[in-house]
Image (cartoon, rainbow, N blue to C red; front, side, top):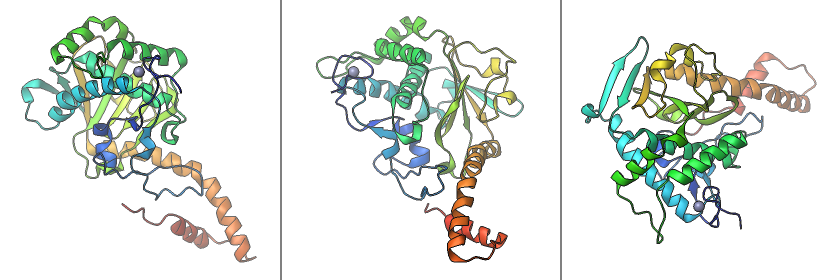
Amino acid sequence: MAKCAICLTAEATQTGSHLLSAFMVESTIGKRGNEKGYILDDEPNFDYRINTGAAPIVEDYLFCRGCEQRMSYVEGYVCSEYRDKFKKGAFHSNFKSVSEKNYAIQEAFHVNYYAFLLFLCTVLLRISLTKKKLFNGFELRPDEQEKLRNLINECLPPYLDYKVKIKQTHFLRDITQKAELFQDLYFVLVTYENLADETTSFNTADPYYRLPYNFMFGQVILYFFFSKPRNGGKYLDFFKLLDELELDKVINGEGNSLKTVFIPEDRWNQILDIPRQLLLKNKMPGLMQLFLQEHGKATHNPPTNQEWLDFIERSFPDADK
Ligand SMILES: [Zn+2]
């Protein structure tokens, strides 16, 4: 059996590992145990209406039980100290909000920067390792992957006597002492204030946009850099958003308090249209071919535009929501 992809020593026995945390994807696919998910694909025959549940983000035999529990610990920290607090508004003293022209920046004073970044690193490692279709085009460079694996293994709390048992203050103290492992890692985190239909967001890692890496995980867009970005630098931006942000104001790095960028709902919806249009563009040639085949079997008359539109209508009935 394969070894665990984090500690490289124990057997990878863990089944049902989540590539993305349940709390990250709750908005798009629903609560744990009750998920509804759909894969979008540009193959013309692909049936996007099949409810895949959580299957696309669950994988077996990547990690050992210990490392899985070590990751759960930091996930739990981020979930309770960041996720649960930051949208509820009940903890205003923990956050400071600054409005810019078309966006707001929220700084989180009580979230440990390194613990948060460690959590992000575990997500990136997981989706880089997976062979699951949803992320199978995405891979970190081998040296980047090893940098993350090493820092994850060094910084996650220890697994001893079949459990992870460490006081939070000790965990945070230990990780802060290992700051140099996080050197050269920078990221921009973007979310929305409100979204009428949260299930319309995606979980995607663009395989081609690598400088920085471009991700959307449900409620967040993440730009991840492996070297310090320059203000005013031109970067690969699948979501076409970075140019609107002042990089030096929104960038996270070097242990400073965590910043989250909030953009308006209509801006978020514009961004969602980018992957949709791309999918359609890639899917169209195959669909046209299918249409011509189907048409040729039925009649020798030349196809009309109306028949093409009818075919599209038949091929894309409203997805079961
Ligand atoms: Zn392990």
